[in-house]
Amino acid sequence: MSCFKGRIICFLFAIFGFLPQECNSFGLSPRETKPSRYKPINEETETNDPLRRQIVSSIPFLALGLPANAAETPAEAIRLISSKTIPGLGPPDVYYPAYFVGRWKTTRIISSSDDPFFKDLENLGVKLPIQVTSESRFVPYDAGKDFQQIDDANPNNVPAVADRSFNEKSYYTALSQEIDRLYSSSKSMPSIQSINWTPTNPNVLSMDYSDGSSKEVKVTKRSSDVSNDGSNLFSSEFRRITAVPSSPSGIAGGIPSIYKSRVLTKWRQGNSNDVIEGIEILYNEAGVLGDKSTDPLQLGIGGSGAISSLYGGDSKDLADWRSTKTKILMERM
Image (tube, rainbow, N blue to C red; front, side, top):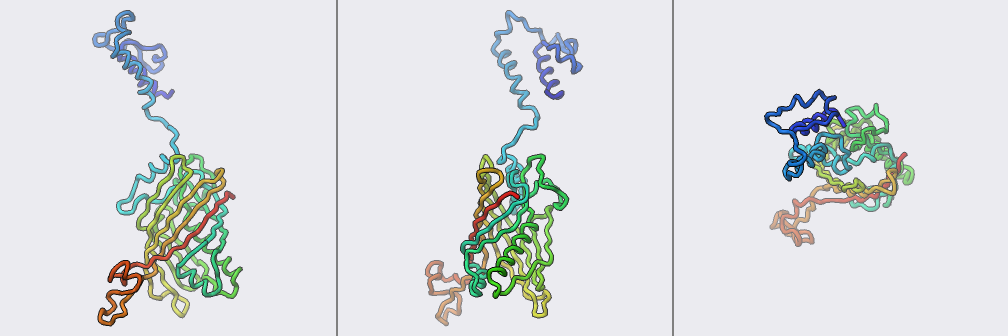
């Protein structure tokens, strides 16, 4: 028992007029009590007092309520950190159970997509599904601002966060290499020249590409939930993406486009802490549906097509969301 707990319990004993010999080590003695206020226990008359018996029997429970380093469940640890929300944004980051910490061989199978990026690849001969194998890394959330100087250990068994710059660059490079390997006649994806992201501000990820284009991904709102045993995790992030195309001269300077995006991810622990399965659905806003009317008198402010029949005449401003579905398997390296 800690010194602090011992003093508290001995003090409670002293209140009721008796003091065990063990309490002398804390500098307390029966002389420090006040006999004029507290009468000693009369074994024959007072041990059967219901109130006294109830108070004395509760002392062990009072001791249990004292400060202690009680072990938290994975869900409690994550919810405690996630409770420190940022107004309008939510938790500062997505927090994962402690067993996520480490390096992982990550296999992604992009099963279906109607996103313009994959539609353009399809026109060049790239057919889904595509399997991409890369490396992912998760670190303890208290690892500090320099992830390069840590190992895969998690001595405090604290929740993890994703190393977003490492994971994004690894996946993008692997996807580009896979497309080049399988479809050498297709146009190559520009390589990442630089990537900027800091753990202290995990909401902004900026990338510059070799062709002069750039992209910034900014999380504007997030939420997450974890099962009590930490074996299942769900997260949702809303993002604003600013893409700047390259100019004909090969340098930045094109007209930027801004669109909304949302990522839904669900993780499930495998048969051990060395296998994790996941499903990801990525929604990107690809402009508006643009179901304009064929009637010139309506001046394009509404439509009479299939979309307008569902959403009315304002369908020309209705966001056109495109989705990409991916199955994920992570195996510890």
